[in-house]
Length: 388
Length: 67
Image 1 (cartoon, rainbow over the protein chains, first blue to last red):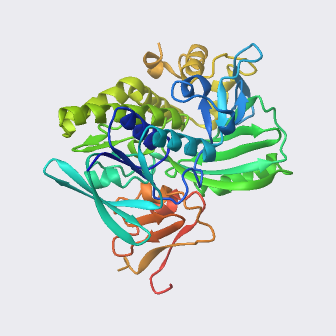
Image 2 (image 1 turned 135 degrees about the vertical axis):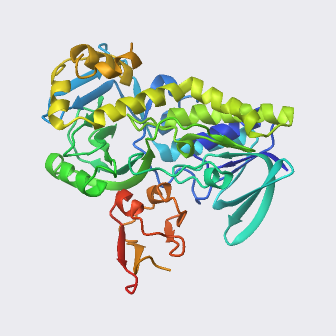
């Protein structure tokens, strides 16, 4: 019998497996794909400082570093978020294909078993433990576990099998398409964000550098607001702006932007990462929260095994940990997201225009919002208490 | 079994196997196996949530008599 079966070998899963194994647990991590890390479903941007809390930085999976962000209103007005001094890179653009494998190797190094091309297709609780039905290359079998960590992404099955409703509404997901574009002109020190109800309804367009003249150029749109598919909006944008760009990779994905869920636990089960809708409703970023959640799940799994208590009631410790860490930011940013979604392009122009051409410093949602509230107190009066 | 003579189909030349359609399906009528999306017509209610969510425009509703 395993102490923990982790389903999904992305950042959340590998971190959960690594942490649980480091705490002496007997861990199996299963990945339904035949290759960990591909196909990528990610824009690959991550905060440098936060990433360093979880893993020793290795240039092998860093594609580029950036000093800040440039944000554009529908009319082209620009605001900059960047540290003033040179050499102050604040963000990494990862090479997820390599990064994810590295994390999986760390889990293995810590003692976890890993098995790929294997799907978890059933859960059955019995006498306090759980039987996980696995399927690999036509063969089905069961493993017994005390705890299952569902880190199986936006299309999570574990949540539903365990009785946690993880179905997203059309206003709770960003439908995303991204091109890795070569031969395009931009300053590689920055990430770029374009807003507008015409160009990206309910979302935004991004450019994340992956080197000189090569970048992830992508879009997220909210299906409840979009009039056509994400790919068409992105094509319109790149046709206009990056005419000579060559697309060397196509990426698609769904990003949960539901905000904080009530609970990510059930008897014997914890959900982590996109499976628990841990991605940020404003930025769509999910890697750091996934790493945090994975680590917390691993820690709580160790406590549960020690206490021989795998009940939802006991596992709520995990809910407490992730909620006290980033749950409140998910909650705050959900409210901010709803506020921004209610704005037409004219209002967005006014908002960004009030600070146009300025460098606001630190690249964070909190910092930019505080500046926007100060410059537009009437427009943003109702959300001021969330940020001051 | 189709609903009102309609069913959802995937264009495999367009599908980028991202799983977004699965995240919005409340009937658990679809499944992604590696790069292969399966739609279970028995469970599908043709609510079109997946069609609206697909970033690639790979999903469509057709008359059930077409294949």
